[in-house]
Structure formats: structure tokens, C-alpha cells
Image 1 (cartoon, one colour):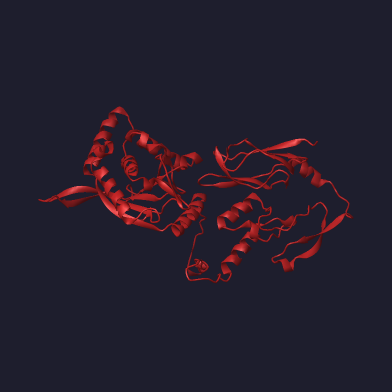
Image 2 (tube, helix red, strand yellow):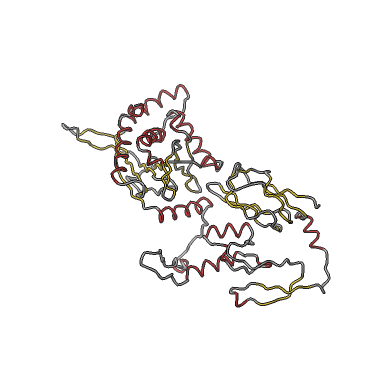
Length: 431
């Protein structure tokens, strides 16, 4: 029996405990060097793990959903060559008389023609829906970025391997194809994105999107299209709360305790409101509504490369000072790019605060699969009539976006009013 070779998770940078979202092989499959074995995914990145040895898969040591780190074993292969041994074998000459004829796929099946290739090229069955897809990790990542189904892409590389240009051609064909006939509204039937040579109008600069921007953009576009969202606006009187926050921070200057932020109060008040209105701490799963008994609150953090959403776990069990300290630390890690995947998972409700910048209101996009998101702008001093005279009051704009499939307008308004009351008199949080 040939020796078994164990293939492990390679160096994946600072990430650890990363979930497996796809497995491409099973016992009995034959893998070649660089074939994708599994796909790992954090909240902001995905990567394929390529085979570092070729051979027959004898054992798959992981399953979907497993969390792995560098050095974790994935599979065992038999009779395979390592990358170094296969490279040495490839350098050995072979008799030119030994040749096979194989079919090389072209842009369409009708254009495929027989050509003569050395017998060292392994014959691969034609690519079919549900069949094994042969593509490098970089091509798989490119296909995911464009939303291309690799099982439907016609390969043009050697041995039926899909190349980057094959993916591009498939996407172009899909965009220019005649829309399917059907009743009005049965599909988006969008026009192709306009292609414009901007340089003919003047000087331009081409700046690639960051990895975070590209991944976030895909998620936001999906959420915007698929969730029938409505935004509800409210104002909270935070005059007394802000005075209390300033007072505590002055006292903390002497003790060295963490500085209180309005975000910490918002998180704690949101938890109290979620406890009263559990529908907002839920996720829609087909015909079922998943009501969460835990209170993990995400908050949008601004970084040089785009927005990320760290998560405060079990915020119902933490005090204001602890939440303020934790949000500050997570925001710092977000700016430095050192957040772990687990720091950005599990949120049931998200807060996007622009209070430090400005604005009067906005419509935040729900972070699927959550049911709602709270947007907050900069507080402003306004004259408010108390029945006898106008009094200066500090008001905080609240913008609640909710999934209308789960939350109707009356429930959303009640949640907003409840949250505003909690912020106006924070003693209610203790009730």
C-alpha cells in the first residue's frame, strides 16, 4: 500500500478558527497539485486551500461548518507526489512517439476540435452541471466576485481547466443574453452596466477598490435588492443623558477609567428595547422566524479600507463602562486590520452611528440575515415647547431600517418610541 500524505491548512495570515463553507473533494477522487480542496471564509474574505500533493483521496478529515486554523489536517491522499517531486518528474524527458489525441474545449462545443497532446496530460471528463470543476483558487475567487457559476462555464485551459478569461466570457455572455420571457416583474431584466471611456472627457485616475469594499459591496447590493426595507425616523431627547456622560468622563479623568461614549449607551438601550420587542432580534429563515435569546450587537466601524462591523457579544450582561472599553478596542483593531473572524460574527442587531461626523438622517442598509439596523446621526440643540416656553434640548436623530416582511410600520414606530424614551430617561433601562 502506498504511503498516505496528509494535506493541512497552510499559512492563512492572522486568521484562525475560520469556518469551511465548501468542500470540493470526497474519498476516491483524484486530485492534482493546486486543485481546490476546500473554501474558508471569514466575514470579509474567502480563500481556497489548494492541494499541495497529488493522488487519490483516501480520507476527508473535515466537514462543512468545521472551523480550522493553520496546520489543521484536511485530507489524506495515497500514491501522490508532493509539489517538489512532481516538479522533478515533469523535468524527465518522455518518448515523443507516445502521444494521445484529446478534445480541447473551445468557446462553444461545436468549435471543439481534436489536437495532439503529449500523453502526460491526464484526460478529464467534459465539465457538466454538478460535475467536478477544475479551476485554480484565484479563478474560483474571481468567479465568486462576479457571481459566476463555474459549473456552467466552458473551460478552454489544458485538461478541461477553467481560466480567468473563461469566467469573463461567461459573464459577458450572461449580460448580453436575451432576457427570459415571462410575466412582467418575474425578473430584474436589468440593462447591462454602461461602459464609458471617461478619459475622453478629461484626466482620470483609476483606483482599485479595497478587498473590504469589494466584499461589502456585494453584500450590500444583495441586501438592498432582496430585503423590502423601510426606514422609520425618530428623535430622542438626550439632554440629561449627555450631561451625565460628560460628568462621568470628568470623574474618570482622575481614576483612569474608560471614557464613556454615546455608542455605549445606545448599545445598552438597544438591548433593553430588543428585550421588549424580540422580533427585532430575529432572522427570517424561509417560512420560519428565528428568535434569538442572546443579545449580540454589531456596530459599524470606519476604517481606511471601508466599513467593518465588529460585534459586542452578550451586551445584556455587560455594563456601560465595559461596553465603552470593548467598542473602543474593537474599533482600534478594525482600523489596524487585526480583527479576528469571530469578532465580526453573530450579531442580531446592528448600530451604524455617524454621530461623530454629522448629518440629520439616513437609511442604513440591513445587514442580512438580521431583521433591522439602527442609524444614528449627530445630536443637535433644538428649541422644544414645554407647554409654557421653548426650552433648549439636545436631540439625537434615530433612523431605524426594518425588514417589512417581519416588521410592520406600527411595530417599528413602537420600537423607535421605546428606544427614545430609554435614552431620554436612562433609569428606565434598569426596570
